[in-house]
Image (cartoon, rainbow, N blue to C red; front, side):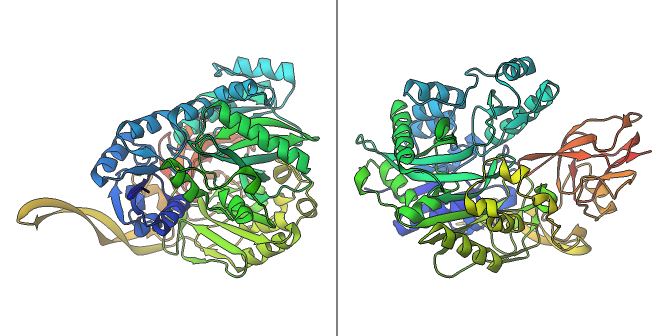
Length: 595
């Protein structure tokens, strides 16, 4: 019998995606939410919703004890982790299964082997699938990176051993950059996945990122469902995915699919997963295995006609897969574009948190939109900045590209900057249309540095209504209880368009400036260093009295799980520092004065 109630341990569009299939299957859903997500779309859609408390991911969605407590209280009989957060965390999967609740994903033992990118490389090699040359031990220091680079050549790539999605990856171009890159990768990996371990591998010159969707059941059936080309990336995170891969011989496709099945069987895999490869000069190399549902899974759904979430749920329930390898058919071409809250002007892709004031989704033949937000929702600096995914299908790749261009031109998102202008630029570029791009193409040859800033509403001093927690006494069935209500209050001086008021040492300073710059400092030659986005100061790299050059990093700012260097735009001496590590800052805040 299929599950009665599923707790979706995630947020945003993936939580909404899982809930929709569950509803079609007649299964009730339970949402969990942080303080900032009280009114989020996944909360509104679920049959039940429970508060985690906290704001940051660590305080909320990565709080194992609270998730387990809500699981107990909700009486859900299964949990779907989505992607990110705990989806590839062995300890979390074991904690769920220990309660008797079904984890809708692979066995903890498979996550342990494949969720750790180092052990996955070893397992793949044992299955006869070779990876990119790299280390199979956790990095202990920058000297190991330098030694590897000197042996295999520069640049090299530092990668998080746990997690995926490009988080915790840094490219190191020479020995001088090794220590800082390792520190940065470890920080980002810790915050995104709760684990900071990293390893190093060779960085290929012009590869394509091609991944193979697999799914297996507990009845010894393991299938490969087809490939996705995810080569259009910035910051090693995907922008556009498509299937089938262009200029990809069918004999290579079959070999890659069979290799993916070999890797999955080697670790006793069950449920949906993705085996990722780098493809260059007709050869492919094992990259990693993502032991979860991928962001880009709708691409495979459109070309195969399968609902991967439904298959996940049925396999987790012990049912056999309803088809064999020879029954899998592929039809037409599908493309997915991620709409992220980022400003892509000049190719910088700076995070753009705030309130979505308008969101018009595309429509028409062959168009699908998976979104986790609607107009009025807040894009917080504390979480991933994916707003929605637009996915199209057509008979050919050329028609699919044209359809996607049409769909994106119909899409309107206001209140925050988005990656749509960059997506349109890429889709219209001759290199993309001809299929000559690679994972390095967006940042090195696409010409996005010429992309002009899009107009965005300036923040203004207004009187906003802000929901404030208020505890009141109430009687429930004759019993006196205390209830926390979030009641609107008028808060003078709240910043319109940036979501809830920020608490902390820099909140008052935020009113000092509302100017947003295309570069990380002020106007050219300005003595004021300002930040172009809302975020949290991770590290201050200078001190008062220190000499500084144009383009030198003043501090590192984290926003939406990404670290950004804030640069000086003039030479001089640091006269004043207005922030320290841990401070929250807002768009346009002055963080330093250069004399």
